[in-house]
Image (cartoon, rainbow, N blue to C red; front, side, top):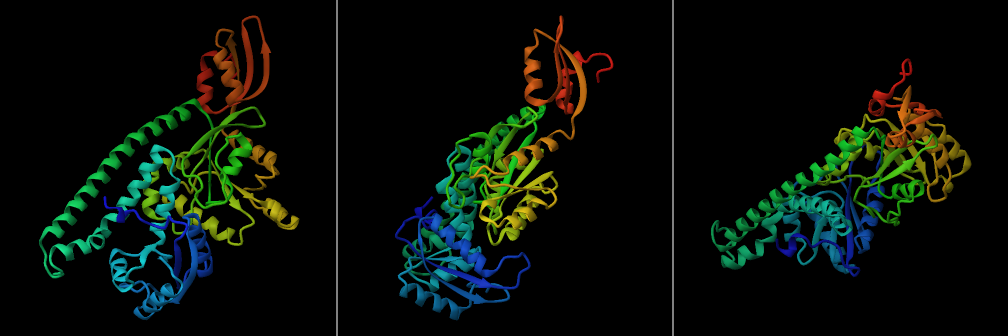
Length: 431
């Protein structure tokens, strides 16, 4: 692939001019919210924001996203501010991007999707994460290759833009074919990785381990909470998408039960659909979880809209109906009256993960939900089956334990999967 296909904001010397349109919407976000988040994305990508341009429109212009007069204004301001890249807050169609590149010569044009893809590429660590990002980027690039090779077509055809055949066009088709081939290779490789992940998930499901998945808007504090609950040592930074790869750790609940807690990629408003598709195997950890722990930055002025953005993605991956607890995080930054209001909301817990407050209440809430499917039984486990005694201590709530002459008598509460493991040792009348 040509380098042009991958070059996005990455140099600290880059100066970005932001462009957004103000149009009617019902999702709780304003243009100011969008541009503030776009500025954070640009900062995460390593550039500085030189300025911003907005236009009020009912819908984007199909040719240039903004009107032609506004495009001329953008070009003039970009040159005045020495901007090296113009970042549009929505995804541009391939034709819109090509038309803008003809109008705004010598200034790079990118959109929100391309910016997010570049950030994901910089932050992907695992082999799976890198494959997922590369797939999303190539699928984004494929319909835009014509514009990238336009200069070669002109050079090789003597500037004849009307010509249909020639070396330049052959190069374009070659590049498209190579891109499609690489996309197919990535999909095959990701299927293999996905099968391995499915095997791990199936093993956890068969073992009867209760699975909790952390979800939430990016930078809501999910990794901080994972570290606070499990000493996971996961990277924590005040940046959007600081971590992408799913991390699973053991979590011990107050009743002695061990569950798994998985941190997943943070969501964002206008999260590119291609990324959701590419990260599907990772997001399956969310879809198949027994409980979703939805972490919300309660101190954020747009917290309610962020909650809705997360719900949109959960709907897309068919996880919206999973049981949920909303953990309102960073409540140490709020007045006490607001903390009390949030804590009183149905299905909510008020916490401050960095300060360690509210975590006991959160763990108790998880323990109650994890025990909903539990049923009691009494078993007599032979002394040569210490593995089952360990299983009881790790994955059940032990009501009583007694050592007898023939084995360990346990009265415990467990879910169906775990109870099946003890079935051969159930005492008469003990089920």
